[in-house]
Figure 1 (cartoon, rainbow, N blue to C red):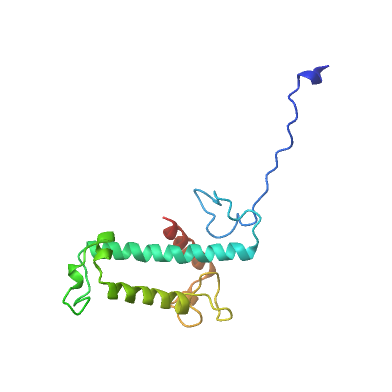
Figure 2: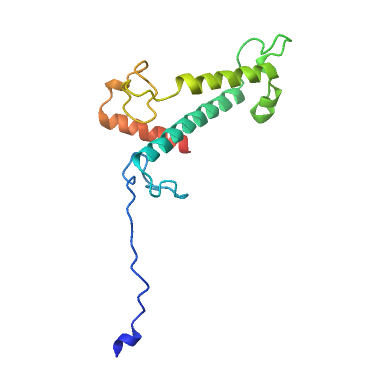
Length: 165
């Protein structure tokens, strides 16, 4: 019979749509991009946690980039970084410069970052936050509330892309 020459059935191919493919950040050219499968079988709480971490790390990366280009442009803080007379201008750039910071200065930086992490840069429930990563916490605004919803979504998507770049 002709069935003997038909290709063998190897099983049905299925395509499972991810529940997060329409979330903010799934945009051209990649669309929804999860190459490590971190969101496979994930719920909304897991997605929100990963988005929170992505936003926070993206913001840190953007600040680090601005610090790097500001330093390379020759812009330094006035004065000395320690009591022995080492000026901010004496500290180099990049990783080499970070190793030139005196130990007491490095500890102060670490303490300040810890303070920001534990006390300032966090989502506080019930303070009017509109989305994951909204650190205004009812205190800061800078005009955010004057934007329409389309502009807010656009600005949030731009922030995500800048943090990913």
